[in-house]
Length: 141
Image (cartoon, rainbow, N blue to C red):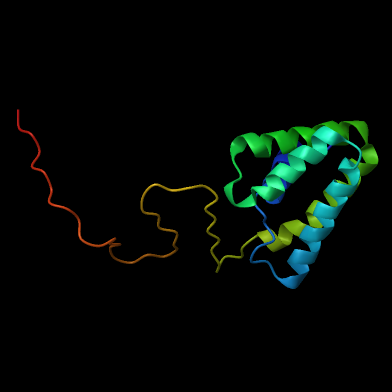
């Protein structure tokens, strides 16, 4: 059976559209993984529905959707050792394309944000979002 962390990683990659920004080889590996999961989920209505939902909502994947997909993957690998082996092989092919070497940085924001966000590496000095409003003096007791 596939390791729990592999299932979670595969589910997260599928749910967040991890192919965005990958090289051509990375996109091909992602497409192969996605195709494998789609083919194996064929004929299983609940699994197909979960996969369709995470693919439709890839930009806003949340924990509940990722967990539902991970659970479907877990049921599938438990019932089909050949799928487990194929899933591991496809993940091994994709994983190097999702990894950054020591000189790179990957920023991924997959949820809505109600305020400012900074995604950066090696910031030297301050970061400003413009003029701040007047500071209220702290209450003294």
